[in-house]
Image (cartoon, rainbow, N blue to C red):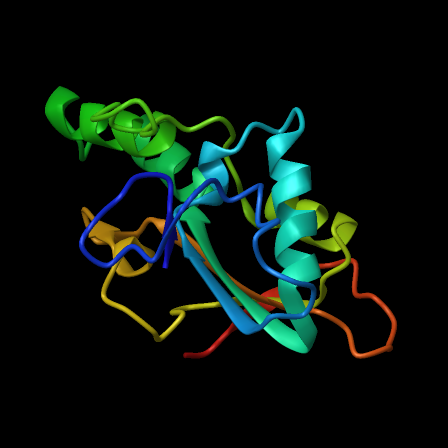
Length: 172
């Protein structure tokens, strides 16, 4: 477990864009729930994804979840169903709750934008899934009946070609 701050279950303290402590092809899988939105698109996001790609074994899988900006924007704009307090909660999901210095979102993702960055880093077989199926964390979060997370699996190739598009959502 890598985290930016020490904690009970944290094995390594560091940032998601610097995995230099790990050799190439160290991991068969990387799980990152609500991490990428904290990385600036002006450098750390791209370098972080390159690092994740580097430490994944060929054929390894990236499990990634980010707040789905398309869903959050629809919720935020729904003045008929949501009052100001609910819309404020949605705004915090978009921009980060600012509960600590690291709880700020630098970028918003939808399937197209996340797919673009994953493909640019070299990932293939990029596919949206309903659930990552690993933990009951923010990747499973619902608000006002809407799932707020975009959950995606992406693979490090074993030598095959790239897929430029995020595939349609797959059943869980």
